[in-house]
Length: 299
Image (cartoon, rainbow, N blue to C red; front, top):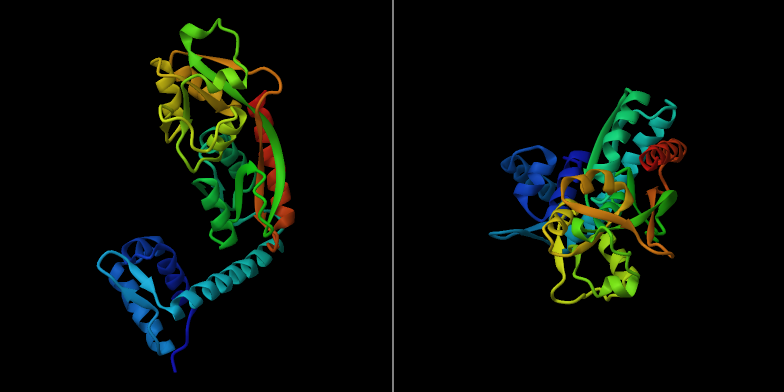
């Protein structure tokens, strides 16, 4: 009798996650027909349907939903067995999947990847830039090894290690360079440009300005810090950006930058990983390396 294999579970987990054969096949680096064959084979082995095929996306049967949860647990446990083997080799090696939030990735990753490659030549670094919610979900599901995010995340399954603090910097049109920096109330009365919903930096900026999560209608949004700064440069409004972004973004447009009055808004950047991973000692060392890179950035 045929048995369920790890390949079946990996393919099914991808399909359950994407709910779409094409996207799941791409994620598994196989063709869509090959994925369909594997799923039919898995259903044959189990003797029950797992998938309800629709014209645009798929739905899972009740058995499929249960299997998706168990498949994730099994795959995560297998990954941790592989991690256990990696601990016996001491230094970090093999694949390292790092999730980094968009307001950190462009400014920290280039130097970090260089330092990691120099220190660990056998390390296969797989960085992914994505929002905090996705980093946390993919860490818990075993699709990422570590994340670099703004703390706290307050997820019991994850360990949080603070790395460094950084201030929020006001960016305003170049013509406003001589004006005194506004306090939170004054800033809330300006036309504030923010990142779109889903970015934790947006929520932190709104909190500092004492604005609700549904700010005024005339507030403008963008998907990147670079776009926000460019809009400030043409006089549309003002924005806040993290301190690490200033050397890159402020030179790309005619803007001025200012520190805000005390108490200045700031955030804590940290690393997170699963509490159950056998690689905790290695990740503690990795966190120290990220801390050093962040310190160089601040010099």
